[in-house]
Length: 211
Image (tube, rainbow, N blue to C red; front, side, top):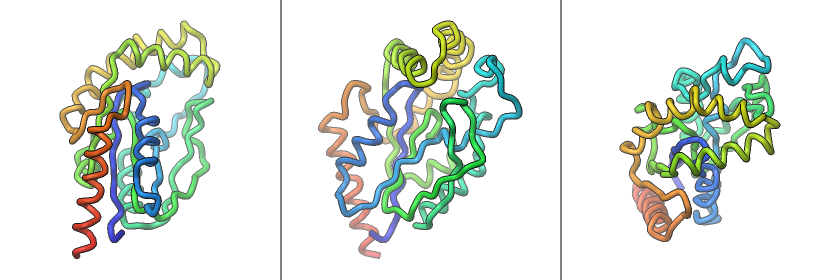
């Protein structure tokens, strides 16, 4: 493959973005070196850390992300270069000072709640996907996940959902559905989506090989 391909997977919190990204990786030819990169790695550093963090910080607003670093990193990966990106600590909801190396890859799958927000990044993508999931399903998934994996209380999770998550989804995330080439239903990676993604990748590879 002569060109690194960028696939963007967007959708609200708890929509199943990571699952869809993993499914896409599975259906791609084994000969392609594929990496999944989370937008969470590019949260801005915060200056405080306490038990009220979820009410003091809006994790779902575009301003929560380091867009310049995100763009530079994606451009580097698309130039088929090994790229260092930040590591995000989900237990503390904090971008750490540590980094991880993303090796030179044929396909980068970039997933996140606002991964289709920036037009400069959108222009670099070969395929743009939005995972369409009802609000009630997303809330249930987030509640179960944050209690089990992050040790948060019901009141804490519900409060954050009401104060920021739900509002930001309506203002910023849901409108990004219009930016997508393909909208995938929340409950499954259906055959139509699989065929479309495979066909898109094959077309891109053929065009690249002719150059």
